Image (cartoon, rainbow, N blue to C red; front, side):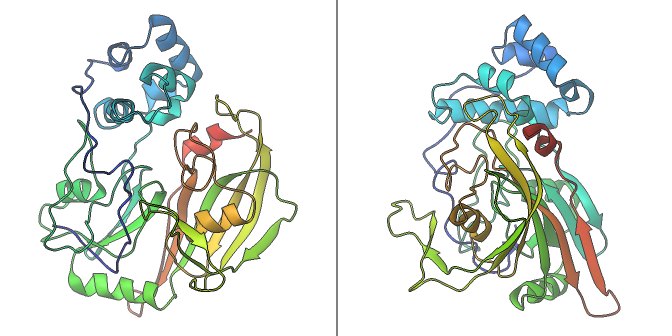
Length: 335
Protein backbone atom coordinates (compact mmCIF):
# COMPACT_ATOMS: atom_id res chain seq x y z
CA UNK A 1 0.00 0.00 0.00
CA UNK A 2 0.95 3.64 -0.19
CA UNK A 3 3.35 5.46 2.06
CA UNK A 4 3.87 9.20 2.36
CA UNK A 5 6.81 11.32 3.40
CA UNK A 6 6.13 13.44 6.53
CA UNK A 7 2.88 13.86 8.49
CA UNK A 8 0.03 15.20 6.35
CA UNK A 9 -1.85 16.48 9.40
CA UNK A 10 -5.39 15.58 10.41
CA UNK A 11 -7.72 14.07 7.88
CA UNK A 12 -10.51 16.30 6.60
CA UNK A 13 -13.34 15.35 8.97
CA UNK A 14 -15.92 16.73 6.57
CA UNK A 15 -16.39 14.81 3.34
CA UNK A 16 -14.09 11.99 4.46
CA UNK A 17 -15.78 11.35 7.79
CA UNK A 18 -16.39 7.68 8.46
CA UNK A 19 -20.13 8.10 8.96
CA UNK A 20 -20.80 9.52 5.49
CA UNK A 21 -21.84 7.32 2.61
CA UNK A 22 -24.07 7.19 -0.42
CA UNK A 23 -27.58 5.87 0.01
CA UNK A 24 -28.23 5.34 -3.71
CA UNK A 25 -26.59 3.21 -6.36
CA UNK A 26 -24.30 4.64 -8.99
CA UNK A 27 -25.73 6.47 -12.00
CA UNK A 28 -25.57 4.59 -15.30
CA UNK A 29 -26.13 5.33 -18.96
CA UNK A 30 -25.01 4.22 -22.41
CA UNK A 31 -24.06 7.77 -23.35
CA UNK A 32 -23.89 11.25 -21.83
CA UNK A 33 -27.50 12.20 -22.49
CA UNK A 34 -28.88 9.01 -20.97
CA UNK A 35 -26.57 9.36 -17.97
CA UNK A 36 -27.69 12.95 -17.32
CA UNK A 37 -31.33 11.92 -17.68
CA UNK A 38 -30.77 9.12 -15.17
CA UNK A 39 -29.26 11.70 -12.83
CA UNK A 40 -32.62 13.48 -12.79
CA UNK A 41 -32.13 16.12 -15.47
CA UNK A 42 -35.04 17.03 -17.73
CA UNK A 43 -34.61 16.88 -21.54
CA UNK A 44 -34.48 20.69 -21.56
CA UNK A 45 -31.75 20.73 -18.89
CA UNK A 46 -29.72 18.12 -20.80
CA UNK A 47 -30.00 20.11 -24.00
CA UNK A 48 -29.09 23.40 -22.35
CA UNK A 49 -26.13 22.04 -20.38
CA UNK A 50 -24.57 20.34 -23.42
CA UNK A 51 -25.12 23.46 -25.49
CA UNK A 52 -23.47 25.63 -22.84
CA UNK A 53 -20.63 23.16 -22.15
CA UNK A 54 -20.10 20.93 -25.21
CA UNK A 55 -16.86 19.56 -23.72
CA UNK A 56 -19.04 17.25 -21.63
CA UNK A 57 -19.77 15.32 -24.80
CA UNK A 58 -16.55 15.84 -26.73
CA UNK A 59 -13.80 15.72 -24.06
CA UNK A 60 -15.07 14.27 -20.77
CA UNK A 61 -14.75 10.52 -20.20
CA UNK A 62 -18.21 9.14 -19.47
CA UNK A 63 -17.26 6.16 -17.28
CA UNK A 64 -14.16 7.51 -15.54
CA UNK A 65 -15.11 11.16 -15.20
CA UNK A 66 -18.76 12.10 -15.68
CA UNK A 67 -20.46 9.17 -13.92
CA UNK A 68 -18.14 9.20 -10.85
CA UNK A 69 -18.57 12.96 -10.47
CA UNK A 70 -22.36 12.60 -10.61
CA UNK A 71 -22.06 9.93 -7.94
CA UNK A 72 -19.90 12.33 -5.90
CA UNK A 73 -22.63 14.98 -6.13
CA UNK A 74 -25.21 12.38 -5.09
CA UNK A 75 -22.95 11.49 -2.17
CA UNK A 76 -22.92 15.17 -1.13
CA UNK A 77 -26.69 15.36 -1.52
CA UNK A 78 -27.24 12.18 0.51
CA UNK A 79 -25.25 13.77 3.34
CA UNK A 80 -26.90 17.20 3.14
CA UNK A 81 -23.85 18.94 1.65
CA UNK A 82 -25.53 20.69 -1.31
CA UNK A 83 -27.38 23.32 0.74
CA UNK A 84 -30.72 21.93 -0.39
CA UNK A 85 -29.92 22.10 -4.11
CA UNK A 86 -30.65 19.04 -6.25
CA UNK A 87 -27.91 17.17 -8.13
CA UNK A 88 -29.54 17.97 -11.48
CA UNK A 89 -29.71 21.68 -10.66
CA UNK A 90 -26.08 21.68 -9.55
CA UNK A 91 -24.95 20.11 -12.84
CA UNK A 92 -27.12 22.43 -14.91
CA UNK A 93 -25.75 25.48 -13.11
CA UNK A 94 -22.06 24.52 -13.05
CA UNK A 95 -21.40 21.66 -15.53
CA UNK A 96 -17.64 21.93 -14.90
CA UNK A 97 -18.40 20.10 -11.65
CA UNK A 98 -18.16 16.87 -13.68
CA UNK A 99 -14.44 17.39 -14.42
CA UNK A 100 -12.15 14.62 -13.09
CA UNK A 101 -9.18 14.10 -15.38
CA UNK A 102 -6.28 11.98 -14.07
CA UNK A 103 -3.25 12.16 -16.31
CA UNK A 104 0.53 11.93 -16.15
CA UNK A 105 2.76 14.98 -16.44
CA UNK A 106 5.94 12.86 -16.43
CA UNK A 107 7.06 9.27 -15.86
CA UNK A 108 10.40 7.48 -15.69
CA UNK A 109 11.88 4.52 -13.81
CA UNK A 110 11.85 6.40 -10.49
CA UNK A 111 8.96 8.88 -10.60
CA UNK A 112 5.39 9.28 -11.79
CA UNK A 113 4.17 12.88 -11.73
CA UNK A 114 0.38 13.10 -11.74
CA UNK A 115 -1.91 16.02 -12.49
CA UNK A 116 -4.28 15.31 -9.59
CA UNK A 117 -7.95 16.22 -10.00
CA UNK A 118 -9.66 18.37 -7.38
CA UNK A 119 -11.48 16.61 -4.51
CA UNK A 120 -9.49 13.41 -4.99
CA UNK A 121 -7.61 11.90 -2.04
CA UNK A 122 -4.03 10.72 -2.02
CA UNK A 123 -5.39 7.92 0.17
CA UNK A 124 -2.60 7.47 2.69
CA UNK A 125 -4.03 7.44 6.23
CA UNK A 126 -2.06 9.13 9.00
CA UNK A 127 0.05 6.76 11.02
CA UNK A 128 0.43 4.27 8.16
CA UNK A 129 1.21 1.39 8.37
CA UNK A 130 -1.28 -0.05 10.82
CA UNK A 131 -4.39 1.91 9.93
CA UNK A 132 -7.29 0.56 7.92
CA UNK A 133 -7.27 1.90 4.39
CA UNK A 134 -10.00 4.40 3.60
CA UNK A 135 -12.73 2.72 1.55
CA UNK A 136 -14.60 4.26 -1.42
CA UNK A 137 -17.63 6.30 -0.41
CA UNK A 138 -19.56 6.09 -3.70
CA UNK A 139 -19.41 4.17 -7.00
CA UNK A 140 -16.37 5.28 -8.98
CA UNK A 141 -14.64 6.91 -6.00
CA UNK A 142 -10.94 6.74 -6.86
CA UNK A 143 -7.81 7.92 -5.06
CA UNK A 144 -4.49 8.83 -6.64
CA UNK A 145 -3.10 5.70 -5.02
CA UNK A 146 -5.78 3.58 -6.72
CA UNK A 147 -5.05 5.18 -10.09
CA UNK A 148 -1.29 4.68 -9.78
CA UNK A 149 -1.64 1.08 -8.62
CA UNK A 150 -3.67 0.28 -11.72
CA UNK A 151 -1.11 1.95 -13.96
CA UNK A 152 1.96 0.49 -12.22
CA UNK A 153 1.04 -3.00 -10.98
CA UNK A 154 4.75 -3.88 -10.56
CA UNK A 155 5.36 -1.19 -7.92
CA UNK A 156 5.59 -2.76 -4.45
CA UNK A 157 3.96 0.37 -2.99
CA UNK A 158 3.03 3.92 -3.99
CA UNK A 159 5.34 6.42 -2.27
CA UNK A 160 4.11 10.02 -2.29
CA UNK A 161 7.02 12.45 -1.96
CA UNK A 162 4.99 15.40 -0.65
CA UNK A 163 1.44 16.44 0.23
CA UNK A 164 -1.37 18.05 -1.77
CA UNK A 165 -4.69 18.92 -0.16
CA UNK A 166 -7.71 16.86 -1.14
CA UNK A 167 -9.37 20.01 -2.53
CA UNK A 168 -6.35 21.10 -4.59
CA UNK A 169 -5.60 19.95 -8.12
CA UNK A 170 -2.22 19.82 -9.85
CA UNK A 171 1.31 18.45 -9.70
CA UNK A 172 1.85 15.50 -7.36
CA UNK A 173 5.03 13.36 -7.31
CA UNK A 174 5.08 9.66 -6.45
CA UNK A 175 8.15 7.42 -6.39
CA UNK A 176 8.55 3.78 -7.34
CA UNK A 177 11.26 3.02 -4.76
CA UNK A 178 12.63 4.16 -1.39
CA UNK A 179 15.80 5.71 -2.81
CA UNK A 180 13.91 7.96 -5.22
CA UNK A 181 11.29 8.88 -2.60
CA UNK A 182 14.01 9.84 -0.14
CA UNK A 183 15.86 11.99 -2.67
CA UNK A 184 12.73 13.98 -3.54
CA UNK A 185 11.49 14.28 0.04
CA UNK A 186 14.89 15.64 1.11
CA UNK A 187 14.48 18.57 -1.29
CA UNK A 188 11.12 19.44 0.28
CA UNK A 189 12.50 19.20 3.82
CA UNK A 190 15.42 21.45 2.92
CA UNK A 191 13.08 23.95 1.23
CA UNK A 192 14.89 23.57 -2.06
CA UNK A 193 11.75 22.52 -3.91
CA UNK A 194 10.23 25.48 -5.78
CA UNK A 195 6.45 25.47 -6.09
CA UNK A 196 4.05 27.72 -7.95
CA UNK A 197 0.26 27.65 -7.63
CA UNK A 198 -2.63 29.29 -9.45
CA UNK A 199 -5.70 30.48 -7.56
CA UNK A 200 -8.86 32.42 -8.25
CA UNK A 201 -9.65 34.70 -5.32
CA UNK A 202 -12.42 37.06 -4.39
CA UNK A 203 -11.81 40.77 -4.97
CA UNK A 204 -9.36 42.93 -6.88
CA UNK A 205 -6.15 43.39 -4.84
CA UNK A 206 -4.83 46.94 -4.70
CA UNK A 207 -1.25 45.79 -5.29
CA UNK A 208 -0.01 43.63 -8.14
CA UNK A 209 2.46 41.82 -5.88
CA UNK A 210 2.79 41.31 -2.13
CA UNK A 211 4.20 38.97 0.50
CA UNK A 212 2.47 37.52 3.56
CA UNK A 213 4.67 36.32 6.42
CA UNK A 214 2.34 36.03 9.42
CA UNK A 215 2.90 32.88 11.55
CA UNK A 216 0.16 30.25 11.62
CA UNK A 217 -0.95 27.30 13.71
CA UNK A 218 -3.88 25.00 14.46
CA UNK A 219 -7.20 26.75 15.18
CA UNK A 220 -8.30 25.75 18.70
CA UNK A 221 -11.81 27.03 18.01
CA UNK A 222 -12.36 24.44 15.28
CA UNK A 223 -13.89 21.41 17.02
CA UNK A 224 -12.96 19.15 14.10
CA UNK A 225 -9.28 20.15 14.23
CA UNK A 226 -9.17 20.84 10.49
CA UNK A 227 -8.67 24.59 10.15
CA UNK A 228 -5.51 26.63 10.72
CA UNK A 229 -5.37 30.22 11.96
CA UNK A 230 -3.02 33.19 12.05
CA UNK A 231 -1.10 32.93 15.34
CA UNK A 232 1.58 35.66 15.73
CA UNK A 233 2.50 34.56 19.26
CA UNK A 234 2.72 30.75 19.06
CA UNK A 235 2.46 29.96 15.34
CA UNK A 236 5.13 28.66 13.00
CA UNK A 237 6.97 31.06 10.72
CA UNK A 238 5.84 30.96 7.09
CA UNK A 239 5.99 33.09 3.97
CA UNK A 240 3.89 33.32 0.82
CA UNK A 241 4.48 35.51 -2.25
CA UNK A 242 1.49 36.51 -4.37
CA UNK A 243 1.29 38.08 -7.84
CA UNK A 244 -1.87 39.15 -9.69
CA UNK A 245 -2.18 37.72 -13.21
CA UNK A 246 -5.68 38.89 -14.14
CA UNK A 247 -8.62 40.80 -12.71
CA UNK A 248 -12.18 40.11 -13.77
CA UNK A 249 -15.62 38.90 -12.68
CA UNK A 250 -16.83 35.51 -11.49
CA UNK A 251 -18.72 33.83 -14.32
CA UNK A 252 -19.93 30.73 -12.44
CA UNK A 253 -23.71 30.72 -12.21
CA UNK A 254 -24.78 31.10 -8.60
CA UNK A 255 -25.00 33.49 -5.69
CA UNK A 256 -21.54 35.02 -6.31
CA UNK A 257 -21.87 35.42 -10.09
CA UNK A 258 -20.58 38.78 -11.29
CA UNK A 259 -18.52 39.56 -8.20
CA UNK A 260 -14.96 40.83 -8.74
CA UNK A 261 -12.36 38.06 -8.71
CA UNK A 262 -8.68 37.78 -9.61
CA UNK A 263 -6.38 35.04 -10.84
CA UNK A 264 -3.13 35.02 -8.88
CA UNK A 265 0.16 33.17 -8.96
CA UNK A 266 1.19 32.03 -5.49
CA UNK A 267 4.71 30.99 -4.47
CA UNK A 268 4.97 29.47 -0.98
CA UNK A 269 8.48 29.93 0.43
CA UNK A 270 7.60 27.59 3.30
CA UNK A 271 5.23 24.63 3.11
CA UNK A 272 2.85 24.77 6.07
CA UNK A 273 -0.48 22.97 5.92
CA UNK A 274 -3.19 25.24 4.41
CA UNK A 275 -0.62 28.05 4.19
CA UNK A 276 -1.77 29.42 0.83
CA UNK A 277 -5.44 29.23 1.72
CA UNK A 278 -4.98 30.98 5.06
CA UNK A 279 -2.57 33.65 3.79
CA UNK A 280 -4.93 34.57 0.96
CA UNK A 281 -7.80 34.83 3.43
CA UNK A 282 -5.60 36.98 5.71
CA UNK A 283 -4.92 39.24 2.72
CA UNK A 284 -8.64 39.82 2.33
CA UNK A 285 -8.86 37.69 -0.81
CA UNK A 286 -10.03 34.16 0.05
CA UNK A 287 -10.04 31.48 -2.62
CA UNK A 288 -13.24 30.98 -4.57
CA UNK A 289 -14.91 27.74 -3.45
CA UNK A 290 -12.78 27.31 -0.32
CA UNK A 291 -15.50 26.46 2.18
CA UNK A 292 -12.95 26.22 5.02
CA UNK A 293 -11.56 29.76 4.66
CA UNK A 294 -14.28 31.67 2.80
CA UNK A 295 -18.06 31.98 2.90
CA UNK A 296 -18.37 30.33 -0.53
CA UNK A 297 -20.16 26.99 -0.34
CA UNK A 298 -21.74 27.59 -3.75
CA UNK A 299 -18.83 27.08 -6.16
CA UNK A 300 -18.20 23.47 -7.15
CA UNK A 301 -14.48 23.37 -6.32
CA UNK A 302 -11.73 25.15 -4.43
CA UNK A 303 -9.97 27.13 -7.15
CA UNK A 304 -6.40 26.29 -6.13
CA UNK A 305 -4.10 24.44 -8.54
CA UNK A 306 -0.50 23.28 -8.06
CA UNK A 307 0.78 24.56 -11.38
CA UNK A 308 4.54 24.11 -11.37
CA UNK A 309 7.12 22.18 -9.35
CA UNK A 310 10.90 22.39 -9.71
CA UNK A 311 13.19 19.90 -7.91
CA UNK A 312 16.97 20.49 -8.09
CA UNK A 313 18.19 16.88 -7.91
CA UNK A 314 21.88 16.05 -7.72
CA UNK A 315 23.57 14.99 -10.95
CA UNK A 316 23.21 13.01 -13.08
CA UNK A 317 19.44 13.65 -12.95
CA UNK A 318 19.84 17.38 -12.42
CA UNK A 319 17.02 19.90 -12.05
CA UNK A 320 13.57 18.70 -13.08
CA UNK A 321 10.55 20.94 -13.65
CA UNK A 322 7.00 19.69 -14.10
CA UNK A 323 3.96 21.73 -15.13
CA UNK A 324 0.30 20.82 -14.76
CA UNK A 325 -1.63 23.02 -17.22
CA UNK A 326 -4.25 25.38 -15.90
CA UNK A 327 -7.55 23.45 -15.66
CA UNK A 328 -10.33 24.34 -18.09
CA UNK A 329 -12.52 25.01 -15.05
CA UNK A 330 -10.37 28.06 -14.23
CA UNK A 331 -11.03 29.68 -17.61
CA UNK A 332 -14.74 28.97 -17.21
CA UNK A 333 -14.86 30.56 -13.76
CA UNK A 334 -13.95 34.16 -14.64
CA UNK A 335 -14.26 36.67 -17.41
